[in-house]
Image (cartoon, rainbow, N blue to C red):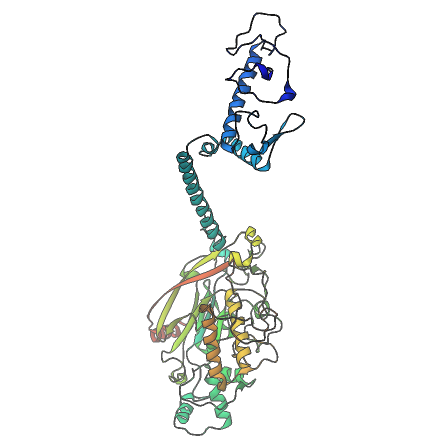
Length: 550
């Protein structure tokens, strides 16, 4: 470097007294060296490589000047700042290196990042450009970031609300891999006038005549299956006796006497082999292909006689389907082929003397519900009616939804479903949204009324509600339904549902989410007139025995 005393006026001096070098006059400002010996000063490049290095150094110097202009520095050198080093935010150290303040370093690195980065538009902030250009690029980049962040947030919200994607399977599932649905049949006639004339006692109560205690008690029992009549006063007590179920069974028309011609998969059976009695919200009904009570209900549940008692089998479960080693006699039963020849058939008749039009619906016949084998039947919620002297045919289209095992890693609240083995219930061994709702409503009813309806699962010590509890039951069920749609109310968990105590008996919050692996049966039915008189006459003449077994 030249001595500071020999600098020309158009050369900016960088450095101070500690860089004094020997004087020389062998170099002029126009880069012409005076012919002399090799030992000249300043030293000159001897090859193209050194010349290239000189150009790089000059370019770096230009960039340093540009950086100083942007970050507030002065390219004229330390000669102008000798008395005030803090003005440009840097100072010289004793070792000859320049020391910058923290703010100056941040600015320098920012400018270097902008000029050296590959992000479009950022480089203009590091260059010495007009404020209008920088403002334009600042607005453009800000808008781009805004829209990008908005799209990211929108995608995250959609994923947060629906983290699981439902898609259709690429191939159909064979019909023999899914169980045949459970078929529950409930007669509309709940009482035989020859055993207990409900119409007779109804007229007596409407005329304010006095009934005996036994008549009042039995009339109150039938009010749960014949529907409560408005304006009547029941005096049979708040709780029902243990004889209620026995009375309902004895007074109802015999189902097996009127059932005949039972077929399944083209094979004739005795109807008692296919259908078993079960308690439902519509009274005593008869069901086909339901899971045995010991596999569906927990061990603490009280059972009545042989109701809901079927074949105990471990051939099938909802998550894994049928075991590969099971044969054609697997239970729950399954259809081998689709079509009417492989359907379930049954003929039902009813004696005219057993019809009581004041008990239940005025349309006499049978209610039929198609449901999943692991679901407790609730006939009044969903059914179709087969009136007298009619023939009905129902087509079933099953829908099966399976869930990948990887979804189990998500929280149940986020995936919005439960796996069958993931959550346990108090009265059920198998979880489903329907079973959870039944248990939740039963617990809420018990907390409000001190009793439960006769058809819900209950443990020992829980009483059955009597006729005087009609108003409380109706109010509890109404409040339970409202709790599902009125989210503004404070909800409390019911005792026993989640093994937590509750000081208040407000609204239930049982969180009965759908089941992740589910199966639904869509039903389409058609009906036509049935000339049953001619049919039975022909069967007698041809010698067909409708009670033959397989």
